[in-house]
Length: 226
Image (cartoon, rainbow, N blue to C red; front, side):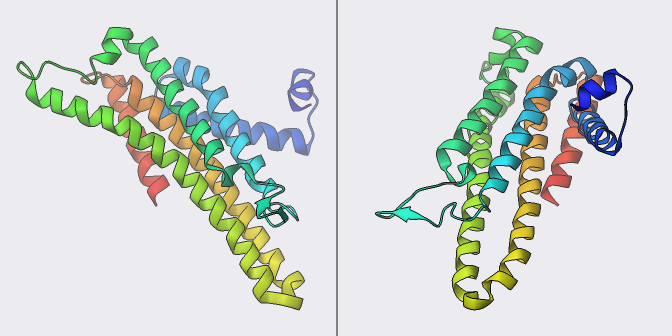
């Protein structure tokens, strides 16, 4: 709807909001990646991750999701509260970053980032091993970060509903609003980390452009950590 309106030159507040949000997210992608062509290529995957996380996370606050069960098995589950879902998203992110790394460095060039001759370059070989281990740590961190927050959110809502008793109708809306905010933060973090991991995968040591990309990625890492 928004794209059609923009193409026809018709604008309203909703279209302006969508355009503002899109330009903001796309600007961040260019800033983190450091290369406009690569940023334009990876952006659809990153923004899809954002919407996949935020929509499925917000669905978890609907009545009955996670709370109605049959023989101890929940009838409705929020996808982010299922480790299979978060692990699948993390795999897609890591695989996508490696695909762009192969495009940027070539197949053997990308392998050379991880495996180097320990005799000629012992320090580089050690760094390669650490980088190889780092790829798996990123996979685990991505999946468990989202899963942990979503699962904790479901538990929090159920605990508040039980403890509040008759006052649950008054207390729960505040916690539901908080969960909506947390869902946005988690989706944004997943979006940023997807771009950062891609930026780290395509960087070339000694290249000025990639140094800029690395600095931007480090800057974003500090923001996410904060």
